[in-house]
Amino acid sequence: MVTVAGVDSSTQSCKIVVCDAETGAVLARAQAPHPDGTEVPAESWWRALESAGAGRLDRVDALAVAGQQHGLVALDARHRPVRDALLWNDTRSAGAAEDLVRELGGTGAWAEAVGSVPLAAFTVTKLRWLADHEPEAADRTARILLPHDYLTWRLRGADAEPTTDRGDASGTGYWSPATDSYREDLLALAFRGRTPELPRVARPAELVGRTAAGTPVAAGTGDNAAAALGLGLGDGDIAISLGTSGTVFARSATPSADPSGAVAGFADATGAFLPLVCTLNAARVLTSLADLLGVDRATMETLAAQENPGSSGVVLLPYLGGERTPNLPHASGSLHGLRPDNMRPSVLARAGYEGMLCNMADALDALRMVPRRVLLIGGAARSPLVARLAAQIFGVAVTVPEPDEYVAIGAARQAAWALSGAPEPPDWSARTSAEVPAPEDSAAGQEVRAQYARARQSLY
Picture 1 (cartoon, rainbow, N blue to C red):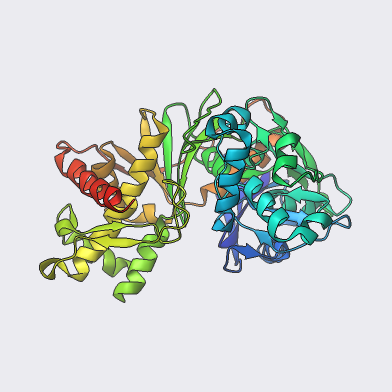
Picture 2 (cartoon, rainbow, N blue to C red):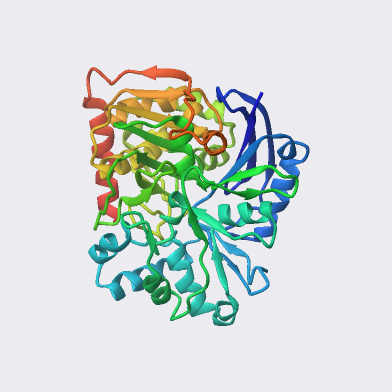
């Protein structure tokens, strides 16, 4: 049997799956934690990969790494990090994003140049922050990598040529999916004239080298592009991922350029495109609310199910860590509509679920696509209540694939594709766990969204 491994180096942990290269059946799994924070040593990702992959990665026929997008790994001339990596969820570069948008001539200029308008998450804004706040570190920066680039390079050894791919490069703010090329002028603009080396952009199904043990390594990609590949996302499908952050994305044959900045015009891992809307807050809303109520998630779900739609007039705006869509990097979470007669744990629990999903519904609206189907994935999607409320609030039928590590599976599928040399990825079909039909009466979901919109508009 030919086997392949996929690595998901996420914000929270390194997850590895080993799959049958022909069918995609998962044969083995492993996981190791990452440190908390919005800046971490890049070396910690490597240690987690070594820990989770021990005894596994040397026995597969090929592997690929998918990683959290946007993170800034700045290396000196001797390939050593000049500082801890800045992650996508580090919002201190929000002011830098505003400056860069203004300096290039507005949001439309950025959308035309690279398909996306830079926000605090983007690598290009972190470069500006580094140049302005840590100029000595910026001066020592000889090479820029993304998290997945760093791990792919470490797997192949320090003498290997660093590589990236279209999917991850499209989240930097200085690579254009429409032209398949770097915009080094934007790199220099952001980094105050500095032009460090950038990784070569590998082809979607390219083998970029081998590990020390001789295992072929595929190009890898960003986490969202890997999730799309793992799901087998097709034309007309929209995926909504409810992880730490939330994402709404779809596969497209043509590049997108949204001057509002809500939709990021990313590339995917197959040579096509992946328009995407991201929120900073999704499953963390439920975890944080359960901690506030002093209950576990199962108990909180039971509490929330006791309440009717609308949470007795209580609305949670779930911007706990600031927000990316809408662009409110300095916002915080807030509760609206509290009265003596509705201050019950069950009401707060229901408001948490509805607030999270209303935020994702706004993201879905921003994509401006009529879905053939909506696929709900991520940790929070495992909740039956989340699926039911999603169908009600989104107003569409919802498919919940069987819970799995789709980012890691997507990386494994890419490795199998690169190993095979075939023109298309292998057919690995995601199994369905649940199908929730669209509501027959949309009034309840519409009122929940209207109540949420009123609270958001009153404050922002």
